[in-house]
Image (cartoon, rainbow, N blue to C red; front, side):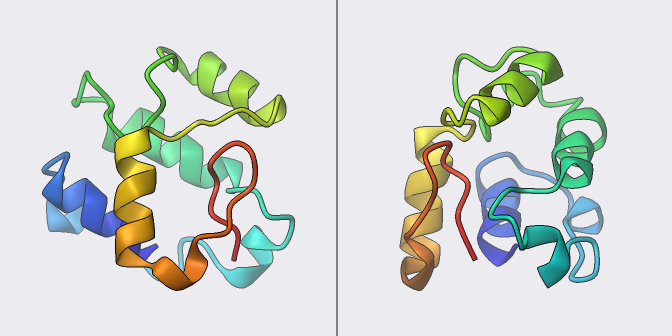
Length: 104
């Protein structure tokens, strides 16, 4: 979550009090290699609702339905910019599945 929070602060200019806390997503939430729905809903509806460009997500994602559909089809959901930032910030976690979701 550290890389995600770093991207949210540096590239999207999200206030610190809106970042993902250490207990919001735990190891059990990540067991299947997918990001939990509660995280995606928080990012989309609560956190990024006021950031119209939603630079965190792939350019083809215009609605939460698009995001959900791409996740279920194992397509990339995150922007290339975020994935590059993630790889730079956490090189030991470069492995990711097809949809760009970093695997634990």
